[in-house]
Length: 180
Image (cartoon, rainbow, N blue to C red; front, side, top):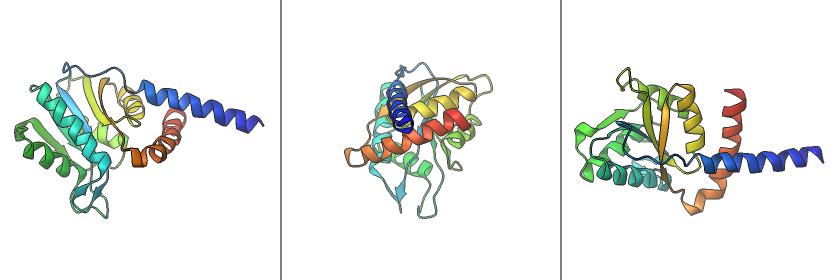
């Protein structure tokens, strides 16, 4: 019975953290925004990555002074890196290539932020995070631990995978908070 109660408490707690991760909303005040990669099927972006790229494109159009860092490595079954996929999408849709930096070595949320931070000026302490709604809480925790103030741009999670990804993220969020 205690295990069930603990599970229910953790389920609701992590759900609240995930919802809270969608704040504060980005307003263009950060000079750099990290666009988090997601699965690429061969050279075709997954629906999750497509939604993230669409959110990044809309944000880039609204705030033309923001530099985007396309972040994500290349999985074994991916023909091109997630960063390259993001880069090509943004350029194809009218964003100037000099506004998009490619970080193509990362394989985790921590690495996305850590490796992307190497492209920032040393004194840059504020970044925008662009990712799926379920992922932003954990991304903010990692970025804050690395010394960054953050705001966010939320990409919706595709309905077909929403339950699965939100459940998985609850576990990842607990791991990040408790063990990393």
